[in-house]
Length: 557
Image 1 (cartoon, rainbow, N blue to C red):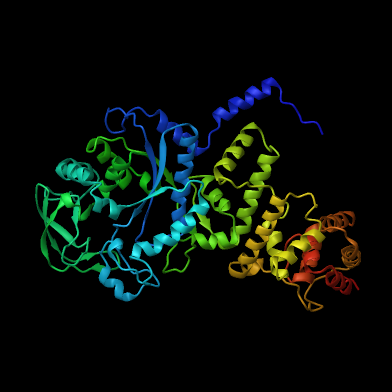
Image 2: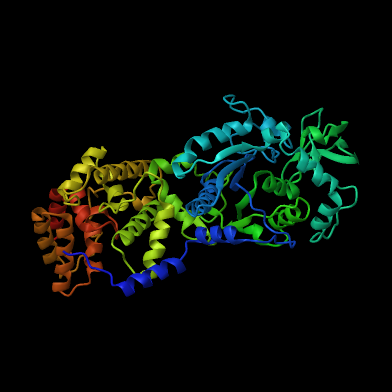
């Protein structure tokens, strides 16, 4: 068939549409590039030779797939800026100076003695890494590259403090404590008094961070006492030591409501992600933004606010046992399916359940088909193309596949190996024989994903097996259905393809004036003892046509 030519008028309209329709990351990139002034002052944004898009994670908790959301979304903004020729780098900062606040599930109770200690100063409870933070970080970094096209440069806050990278900024903030205090007091009922300082020294006696309380400041010298500190569920025990900390040696950390601002100036951050709770003007983001501009004389970054990922409607927590690790995802699904979940819309609540993996894979398939077949109007086409562009990983195509995940999941349960399931697809005519090697490899990958999913995460409703026995009175078969069961039994034996069998059943119901749902309910009840299931044509081929035909014939009498 000849390719349809686009008229000059339509071509110009499409070009205009492409300019008007922007992916959210492109809109943020354009805002970064066109910004001229500070937000809190009249100062002008400097022209720098290099800027940074920053992502980060606290290492006081588990690094699960929710932690990936910030990286994936930040990378999208980085890519949009890079594609526009903006001088930008992508970095990931490990917040390894955060104190341990509670004992996660699986960590010995004896680690209570480390409550209040920076996670980078706590030994690895499993004895295989240098420290507590390194244990969690290494596994995360080993797999995170599977979800990104660009691996960010990794920085450790502990190492940066030790190297003195923040020394000048720390001193500037401490010397401007009055201005910082004024900014923070805007939204406080209990105001910070004049003795307050943003510096938190590490106790040189017990090594804890959260337990030190500053009592006096003279220049770069800070006097402190180590005393108990109450977290929400645990108490960090102070040792009572009184000491002096030299800020210029950076053996401590800034309070978060000033440290974040310091990070932005240190790395020249132009954009950073944050959860929706930071949208509020009295949040740590906006307070740091004001500190950044009014105290450090550097423009605040463009925020990338987003919703967090929930699991079955609740927050991921080791204590609840609902943690999903990145490596677990990669055993069952494409990384692009998770990227799609994060990238399609920023400010929409996400609640993930393992039984939704087939639906997420189907959504990714449909997006690829929509782009390939140019479905929808001009605006839809541009939206779909831009979304697929940002979801895709460098060097890996997202091809429209004729074998959907639900079909693969059914076959994965009925056949012991991927190769046997693959051969059944050929028999069912779900493979035409014209697929490229790349497409066939992706089909096998999907079968392997589905097999892993079936073994570890499939819900009871997703499990498929042939009902070896059906009680005569357990399925309501009206007299008008019995002749249809006989006809379908014969067709099951003679059908050349699963799709052909499916069409036959639909056509037969329509011809006899019977609701297709009524007929399919009986067919499923007789074969898998359930009122619903996958497409019956595919099901019959997968279960084994001979025994399905025999069962239908048995109940047609």
